[in-house]
Image: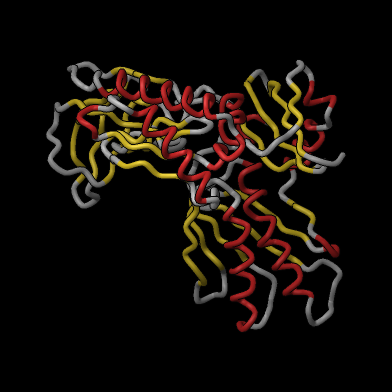
Length: 345
C-alpha cells in the first residue's frame, strides 16, 4: 500500500486513530479514561513543595502539580492546562501557559504577537497570512495581550478557512480566560480526543477512512499486535528491543547475525532513525536509556545526528541528554501518549 492513510476507529472500546505511510504504521493515538492533555481547569492552589519550586493544586479530577510557581498562595484560583499523562500514583502535570490549538491556528493568551510557522518560507504567502491574522484578530483578545501562531498547514488552506479557525480559537480563549475566578475547581474545556487530534495534527494530504471496523480492514490491528513484542526489526537482520520498566524505558540495539566491521554503526543508525516512531507507537515517555551496539567513539556524532533528524518530525517533546560514562545514550521524553500496554492487556 503506497501513500498516506488515516484510519479512524476504536480499539478496545476506546476512540483511536492510526496513520499509515506506505503500509507502515507511523503514528497511533488511543483514548483513555484519564484526563487528556490539553484539558483546561480552574484549579485551586493547595500547598507548595519546598525544594522543587512547585505547588500541588486541586482539580475536579484529582491533584495536579505545577512547576516553577511564583506569587501564588494556597487557596488562590488559577487556570492550568494538562501537559501530559501522569505516571501511576502521581499528580497530573499542568502548566499555567494556556494554548488553544486548532488545525491552522494556535492562540496564546498572555503571549502577544503574530507569528507564522517557519515551515512557510514564501515571503509573499507569509505577508498574506499575516494580513488574514490581523483582520481576524481585530478587536479580540483581553487588553491586546493575546497572541497567535499560524501553523504550517495554512500553506495549503483557503483564507476563509484560516480566518474561521482563528475566530473559533479566539472566541474559545476569551470565554475560558474570562472564567478564571471562583473558589471551586472546575473543568473548563476537554482536551482533544484521537479523532480530533488526527484532524488537527496530521495535516499532510492523506486518504481518510472512517468506517467502523476499518482498523481490521486496513491491517491496522495486525500492525498493532506486532507491538506486543519488545523487539522491533531493523534493516540487515539487526534488532532493537524496547522494554519499559518502572524507572525508565530500556532500549537495546543488537546487530543480529551481521559480524562485519561496520555492523554496529549500521544497526545503530537504523535504530536511531526508528526509535522516535517506536516510542510514540508504544506510548512510552519519561527517561529513555539506549544501549547502542558496540562502535568506535568517533562514530557517535553520526548516530546522534540521525536521532536528532528523526526527532524533528516526531512531534513529541524530547530532550537529548547525551552519552553516559558507560556508553549509553539518554533522553527525556514527554508523556503525551497512552501507554499501549494499557490497551493490549
